[in-house]
Length: 349
Image 1 (cartoon, rainbow, N blue to C red):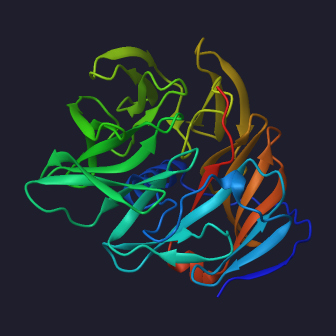
Image 2: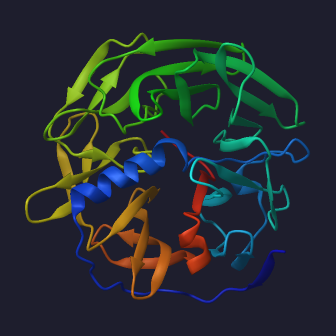
């Protein structure tokens, strides 16, 4: 059962942890590929925008996950779901109720993604009938629409919504490891189009640009970069040597900046790039072993931190300092590789 308590302000500064940075990024990317995306819907639960959940200045103890959420009124993002490992090849997905005080499992799905404005959820089922894999779109009444994606044995995973909530992109995987293309799904018409492309960084996943016109993914370049694709798979532009894309959505809420991790022989930094010009705006020290959730707002990032104070989801400013703790993880949660899914309360851009 979940418990709600009055929250206190939590701010801690982590001690730095020495890591082998490149290995950490590869591990993080592989985890994000098919196991870290979950969303907001049960067939008996209405999907609502995170902004509609009335949880003000509360600590939410999620016993099924072994996590305590520290939420505040006005948060730009809300946890709408989580997933945890239940075997070496399966994850269980838990979805937040419309009331916001409880989570329940959605059987048959290890990967779900809510539309940014609510009302719909995309689910990638464990199994699909016939020769094609599929994505299932649930509406707010719980009605399911199954849409074919790619012919087996290829998989289409990691669904990402365009910001208008109409279209999805899923990443096509070969041998459940390498990204070799993308599938665009129009959830209104119920149609899909698969496009194969070359040169994608194997653990990368496709995302929409903020305007919903183009797709982006990491490229298999020795120095790492980002390629922008037209919806037919042709290259629109390439940003080379800018680092590895970071976050569930690499674009800032305003849509003006792109977040990457820049690696060098001596250090690693989060790099903020002006997407229009391709120019570097800011470097932010990662100060130790962290994995990225994404942007919190245009002046803050949200990260996972593991240090002497435990494993936590935190907000950092662009000076690299922790300003707030969003969630606290128990050892139970870290052993089960619990992953929180944050849905935006609102988006501009």
